[in-house]
Length: 88
Image (cartoon, rainbow, N blue to C red):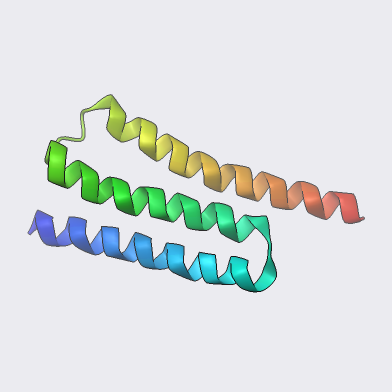
């Protein structure tokens, strides 16, 4: 059952990344590109962690990759808010 859930989460993350990439191509807004990269990192990491490490989430590598992915989301939000303040 865990294999199905891990696969579903990975596919959902990779698909969300494709949607954000499409929005970036349409608008050219860096916000969408950073979100796409974050979701692709998360999806690829789920596949990698399951294939090579197993379901052991105690590894520091597991959390470092998540930190990078979530850090990209935070950077995108802060960057978008700063761009809004410059226009005012």
